Image (cartoon, rainbow, N blue to C red):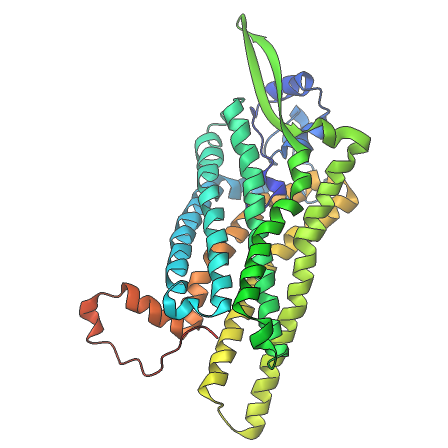
Length: 396
């Protein structure tokens, strides 16, 4: 899922009586139940939670969250379908021989692959959780449902972390190319690019290890209509509950600080440098009253496009990191009353961020448009197209 912490969804009935029974069966306190299962604001554990309490922090988000959640599944499904197609097109265009030669295009291709798999993973989750189950409030205590949600949590977190690592690699790659132009050929070589992409795919499964140990499928057996029935839900593991929930808290901080905030700080610094560099170049050209060479203009366009990619990424990730950090600092009450209210909204922002790169490439890269046109424009229209007077081999 786009937002990992908000993917601990409820796998049980919304009715107060059923919820109370499950709390007893699984030996959960009311607070543990609400936090562990990340109950939506409109759902209740006990009857009094249905009452609007304006003394609760972020109470006004309950109404907004409730209204949006009714539409989230359909909106997310549309974004994911568009994003999957868009990222497939990104891969097709960026892997063309004339485009794939540039290392930076290979990084963009890897980002498209990661984002595409995020979309593909979210499609069945959106259908299952928001379209099939949510409208009817239908309970699901099956083992398959719990395993599906657990797999979705971990798989989507790994994929999204890979996308973060690749975006960080993209920013640093551009910074090195501009900051050290004399050494850029050596530092930004094909071998180093392959190594950077490999590390971006290899590190996230290791970074996410704490989350594998925090959650598990829990079961209980009950007698219902004279039959023995086994119920399964997704909850905190026994290991996560030990030592005053030390592992649970460590996982919170790893997610908020290591996965979210540190990359955002680095990207902010790099983006600031790139924007400053563009400003200085434009100022210098104005003083010299020159328009610059075609190569310089192409570098500027590429840098502007990458800055746009980085800024959209920051808009998506910074709120998640800040709220995660506040949840780790202020405790469970803040998480229950504030953080998970934003879950669906942060999800859709992250999904849009992963789907919009195709539009950015088309609007800001002439070479991308040219290659895309050559691949997909009907041949009959080619005879009326203006001649390509400038052949480029990459974004750079």
